[in-house]
Length: 350
Image (tube, rainbow, N blue to C red; front, side, top):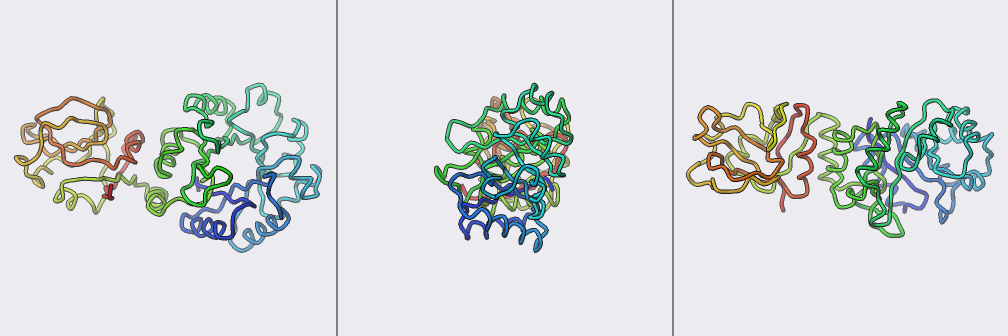
C-alpha cells in the first residue's frame, strides 16, 4: 500500500477515531506518528495505545523521534529496539543524533528514515546505514514550504543512492495546531485538494509512499483516491458537460491515448460521439483554455466526435466544439495523464 496516515499524541479523541475510521476505508495499515512534540503530554499512554492498535488492527508505525523522545520514554539508544514492542517498525530522524548513533539505531532492526528535505550528499556518503529512507518534511507556516525545483533536486540525489522517497500531503479536517493552516511539504500543495496532491505525488513525482500529514481528507477526495488505489481509474471531475454526452460516458472508464501533443489529451474510441450532441446549437467560437473539453465536429470528417481534454491554452478552432469544463479545483489532473491511463468522468457542483 503506497498510502499512509498520521497520528499525534496531541490529537483529540475525536480526531484519532476519525483517522482510524478513514484508514479502514482506505486500507491503510502504516502510520506516521510524532513522538517529539514539545507540548505533548502522556507519551507513555500514547505508545501504549499504539500497541493496542497494532494488536487489534495490525497497524504499524514510523515514529518521528529526537533525544528528548528517548528521555521522556525513559529508554536509551541501546534499548531503542524496544519501540518495536509497540508496533513501531521504524524511526524518522530529523536532528539530535550523531552518525554513529544513527548507525546504532539501524542495528536494532528498526528502519531509519532521514529528513529528505535537508539531507546533503555529504551526509549520504558519511552514512554507513543500509536500507535508508528519505522522508520529506512538512511546513505548517505559510510561505515556508519547499519549492518544486528543490523537491526534484533532493529526489534526484536520493535516487542516485537508490534511497526510497516518502512524502506528505495535507489533510482537510482535524488540522494541526497551532496554525491550523494545513501541513504541506511543497508550498503549492497548501491550496490544492488532497486528491490532486496525491495524484501528483504518485504519478508526476513517482514517490514511493505518500502520507496524509494530519487528520483526514474529505469524503469526495477519499472516494477518488480509493477508486484509483483499488481500480487504477483516475477520476475526472467536471463542473459542466453536455447532458446527453455525459449520460453516454459516465458509467465506464475511458482510455487516454498514449501520445502526448502540445494542446490536449485525446480519448480513445470516442469518434462518432458527436451523435450525442446538437452541433448547431453549441459554441464553436470558444477558446480552448486549460480545463475545457472539446469535441471534433462533423467538419473534421472521420475524426468527428473525438474528445480532447485541453491541457494547454490554444486559439479558437471553428471545427471543434466545447462540450464541457473540468471543475477548477482539479485542473492539475491534466498533468498526470501520461502512459495511457483510464479516466472516469464524474460531475460535481461548482
